[in-house]
Length: 629
Image (cartoon, one colour):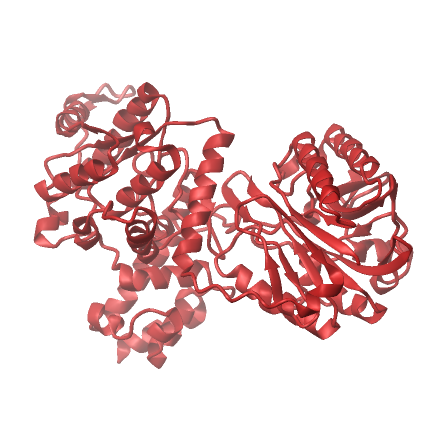
């Protein structure tokens, strides 16, 4: 009876030595458990998100060398693993050496060649070139190779015949995107389906995205059911990045039987190895569908991502500026679980505009966490800065004339924000021996509701891919499920969100941020996360049809509540669109790395240019029509 092991390993990007040691350890474990086959993830040797490290020939040679170590370790066991493959005699379209994203199979120290492939490995066919993926920049696809050889991908894509203990097995080998072919002209799975296979293997390097696992179970379960053979999906765990955006890889490796049932799922964010007897899978009971709420998955992604990020940069202590607001409170509760309260310093930095209410809530939060706490008032420093700016002469060296700067109330707000971050938090972090955080949420990041070199600063923006409603949900989840007690004070959850930078933002009077989160969270989300991104033209079409809330997914009645007239609605829409496509882009470019959890995170996942706001001809027609009514 054929026994197949799924090895869910942590892949450390750019460290083939570390990854190979992990692979060799898992091979020994699989062999000890009686496995005939052991499967590892896509790009298990080099890692996946490496930037332009792929252009280093020395690194590529190292990956080949470590691949040979794995092949040599395949005595009496079939090892399936992902690695970069190099044809040193050929070139990619960029003139650099030819590289393939490849699926290797080794047995008894030799590679097993797919039936029709010109190389002793399977080449990835479908190259994702959207969101965070940039495969075509570095890798040559099977489709391109087929054209080069004057044939078709269907002629090259072929099963691998395995000879194990006197039996022959035919395996269909896919690399990640090859199983997600709905929007491609070519479907590798369907071509292999004609080959009378015994099982499929999909090796993946698939970052966590909220809701992706449910969709994968539907797609891959259907594929296994229609083909009538089991399918093994093996993903990695770990943390990888493309510089600006940081991604967690959750694993969640899954085995599907020939009925399409999920019969084995490996845990999120844990290394694990499981062995399944191929012949018995059809009789295995289907695992129950998870009833966990989305916020539980988000919490695990954030906790794991923060922990591994800190380990990667060797940071053990954290400083957080807390205001008595929800974002900094949730950040504090989250980091306290990662580094421990003894390594967490919370700093409250009140000005004359901070109420006794929020100062008291900050103290309550710190008490609940049992962490380090400081109160550093900033008003004296802010006043000193304003005085210096206004009283220091500004000399025109061409004419010798003198003038003086005038600090407006808006500039004074920015001075407060920068004093807190650039002076207090940066100094406290250096003295404490750690780093300080950026606590921005996704709504603020969308429209640049932050201050450059102020509250936008920090080493990581862990919450910047969460909308405000998700931040509130995370507060409730941590109180209820993580801590089992009220850590984030209910008063912080209940209070109106406010930056408290002026008397116009007095929380005791119910005055807060200009962003109406119950509506704007969803409006901003339509700008960013819809696959067909919404523009003001789309929004005005919905407004005209009376379907804004339906299309955005927000609560019914909010448009009439917030915007009594079409002029009010249009003014609000243009205000935020101008910011989203204007200054906010410059701010996002300078923002800290963002930890991704959504289907579209800022950074490399959402590529944008600083071109300014644009309104289509149809938008201008709709606007004129609505304002004339």
